[in-house]
Image 1: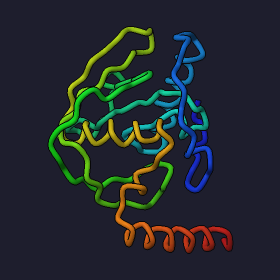
Image 2: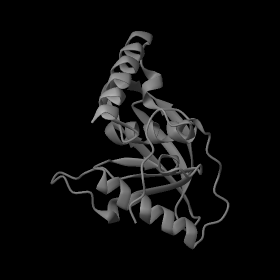
Image 3: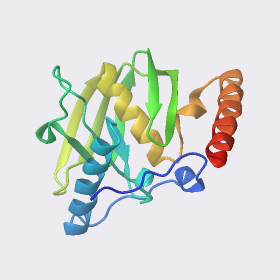
Image 4: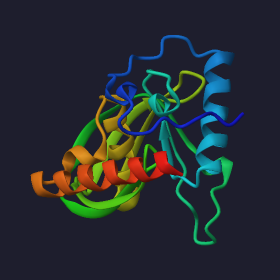
Length: 173
């Protein structure tokens, strides 16, 4: 089922998510719905808070060389924790909760993440480049932050001005 993605400035996006304690059918349904929603919105990642559920759950599905996001390549991460970060990279990011806005963000190049899969089995993954960016971006959501908070003061001011203008135009249509 496709769920509604909440967008900035919805206050729920500022909520710090809580750990999942039960790995049950309800969790599996949420993960399946998150995948359907992410694909429907043409995203590469989605945190549960973006569909209004304040739980430490995120999914990532990077397109392959044919631009296909195969469900068997989907990363489903429950209660993820970054245990190592190094290096630095700048990547142009966007967000389903901040539609139509893209900006360069500086993040770690390499990370190691520990998390649980949908069945409660512990996993460890090393990620670099775009996958590392996707992990770090989604994990910020779990802390109640958005990628726009990483922008410089001036870029943030510019974003706020453009965003307000966009909301006004939407209200008129």
